[in-house]
Image (tube, rainbow, N blue to C red; front, side, top):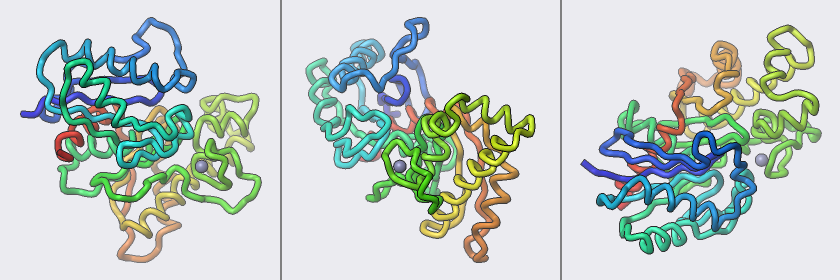
Length: 294
Ligand SMILES: [Zn+2]
């Protein structure tokens, strides 16, 4: 059984030991009780150093077969080409930097770097889908991630799918007009409702306040639209929903909107399923991906 380390850098840094497809000890930065630290304000060098610190504490001299690390943004050939939600990583040869840091610390194991949502899709495939099936997952948080397993050569920035032609829709963190993340992401929701937090918007919709009700419909229609686009390109199937904002999802409404948007009979039959514990699954997926890629 392989013994690999999974790393995930999103809102926090998570590092976990994965044996087979089971997650063992997990460490995180900042540690519980250390207070809030916004990873977006932590320089790239320090992020690498913190990852190494957690890996060192985790493996404690035991041999490690491989290390897999998930980061938000476009990750290709070991380099973060762009990352609107961790902008300091843009252009960073994260694979080279991690390999060097790990080697200096006595871990001479192969390293794989991948998009965090792809890591999540791989984790879902490894633990519940069976590795042969197509797994697609939306991650709903500050940004909107889209993950796919098996990984393909595509860019995979499904969170920036254009879902509206309204030129006023420009709240996306990347600056693009009409994007899914510009409607669904936390940052975008705060820019739209300047005086309300995302959870307050959903609570207001629950009470029937018209502006919030309209927005919550738009929020669901946007996710249905991006999913419908993906169905039309990549075929029907199961779409997982993960991340802190999956609690806001009304699956009935979402499925109805999706049915309205996909009418060709061979493409029907897609559906949504919510998965919790997404960081655990992403750690497993990152670790498992680091093995199959060798
Ligand atoms: Zn965008």
